[in-house]
Length: 92
Image (cartoon, rainbow, N blue to C red; front, side, top):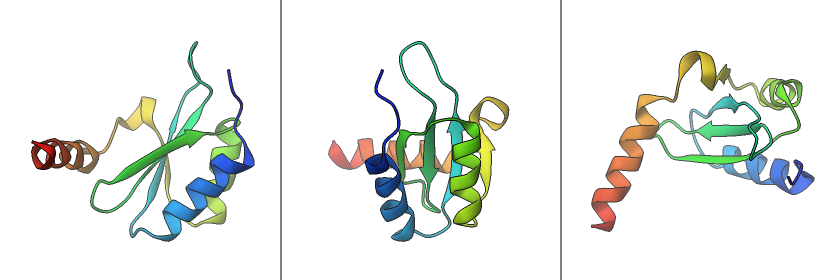
């Protein structure tokens, strides 16, 4: 498995800085992927990248003053699902 890189963090930084109302969601490590951080904007647009561990995700969110949630505890936000549905409809 590929580990989290500075490029992953740079992507998350750039993405969050160009969106409003961004919240972070930590997804746990699986047999296939490392832990990931899912960023979700106010309108449901989202991006995901690898992160070293929960502590790294907490540090990332704290430095950027964004809330951090654990997907296993709270699930995925409704606005993310709605955004995906809108994208499907627009693509036809």
